[in-house]
Image 1 (cartoon, rainbow, N blue to C red):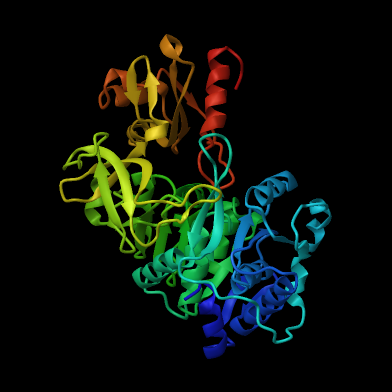
Image 2 (cartoon, rainbow, N blue to C red; image 1 turned 135 degrees about the vertical axis):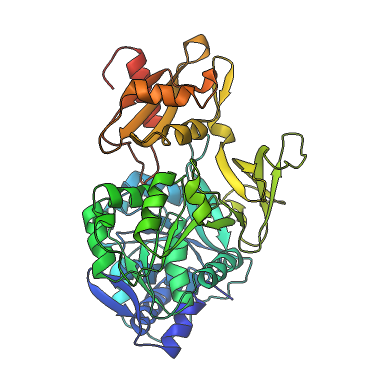
Length: 494
């Protein structure tokens, strides 16, 4: 079974049901099927077939959704690039994956002039063309790649996470069952198509014949617009990184009005969610609160539904247990299994694993995530941080996420990010803090940390800021904060 089968089936069984909602209006499953087929025929006519890579570069729209389906129908692999990415980024990724073709919004075709793709750059408007009834090559097998999502590589070069139809469907089927997805649901798609959160938004909706509402890039970081959208569009399933939900609460007035009756599940992933915000959400709504965990290489491999007892913690909720039929192991550096209370690296095996990184040898065996987790007494897993983000500060090993969790436990701290500038004896552990309502004093915060952490983990510098900088996926820009900390060390304004 291929990832595009759900739209085809819904177009046959419920053609008039709304599949996609975007600013241009609702698009039914029949209309989405038509647009997908029209573009699939154009791709096939240009020689795009099984296994070929097709880069997609356009703002989010129903036509872009059709483009993802069209590529899959051709048996090819879609490579989404963030709608706000510069042309140089598109060219670099197209070259890295040896793309056969590209599809771009009509106003961006000129920017890709000369792109070395054998089948050319197709305008997205071809999705509005006629359907001739010719079959695209298709024929994708369960193990064939469906899409490639590029993530930041540790070497500075993006890595293309290659996901098969089978791996994507294993996750989609689990997600749809876990949230009890129904035809009358409206899923909110906040993430860009190049971010793995979007896979749930789109395909869990299609799996159940529901609707997906596309949040335009222009509104993605406007908390007032997002809150209005949640109520106006009667969203029933919301999924985003915690930072977005926090902005909706802090600046968008989300919890200052009654919770919408239609909202029945709030999903979050991508970064730890400070527990004070989870408490606020739990007091505001009866909707299920689901913490999903998994790097792009595994999609979601663990999850946890927030319980009343979790709200009494002073740390983020656990990431829980295995999801999607995956197998989770927590291993020490010597390969021994971590026991209750111990920390180790999370290793994942199972049906949702990627095929590998594009252009590199296929994944052979389980995936070492590089994430450190703690095994709790009841067997649940708690995220601790990253192996590669472990800081060495004057001989002490410091996991920044652990320090951040303690800082965010202070009532006057809303959000924290900890970085290290310098090295050796000159290393300086710096905490950037967003104050909570009413503010906080550096002395009070330092006293709070000293009472809870060993001396080597106490920040040397504390700086209060209005906001923490974010990258395109809404995560904290730690490289930017490290550069700012280095400037502070040199006596320059950050």
